[in-house]
Image (cartoon, rainbow, N blue to C red):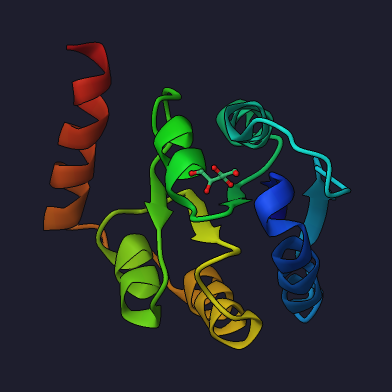
Length: 147
Ligand code: RB5
């Protein structure tokens, strides 16, 4: 599975920790679109880069990080084809996959510790979409893009 990851300056350290967790998974290939330092950058630009890979199919999933996870998740969800879930607990991470078929995960580097963030990433990567009635609802979400 190819995963594109990106963060603004508010979550550069969390991004490195998440990459360590992703390295645990055989067959997971990671592309990091930055940012790579502490210099201030604009999170919508990062969301756009990560989500472009998901929408084009270059990546199956994306992970976006900023200080709170709020701005970058809001930006990601403006992009057609993206279902970005901001998760700071394991239950939500699992449900975002099982019920919402989230293709992008967001977290906040100033909100969550590295340990819980790692568990969230593991849960999000290993939970499959349940389909069935959830598929109908996800299709309705996607139809909202064209209204
Ligand atoms: C950047 O200072 C901060 O606003 C950003 O990382 C994020 O928290 C926005 O939602």
